[in-house]
Image (cartoon, rainbow, N blue to C red):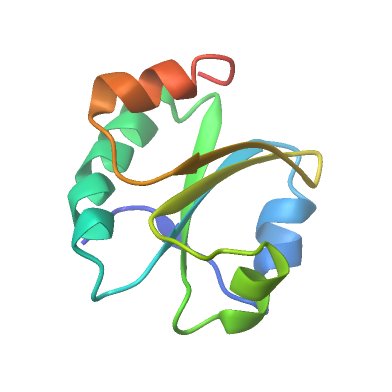
Length: 107
């Protein structure tokens, strides 16, 4: 299982939107194979770049309100939040190099 902090509908405002840090939210579900494949890659990125970006996870099955609010229709969906706004969206599992390239502005 991932080292990333789990957030929920109840904690999303405080943990993500009100944070002064840049936050990447991994929208995922237990049954999603690509989600499980990308989790260790996100852990590596968090270990290497944790001073610049915080990575958290939101289980879409357990937290449907937040998933619906951000129109999550396919997972894994990765959204980068800065100052309470979505500044980047990445859909689908990708290799580490591709994710790092997508996140280059933040890491």
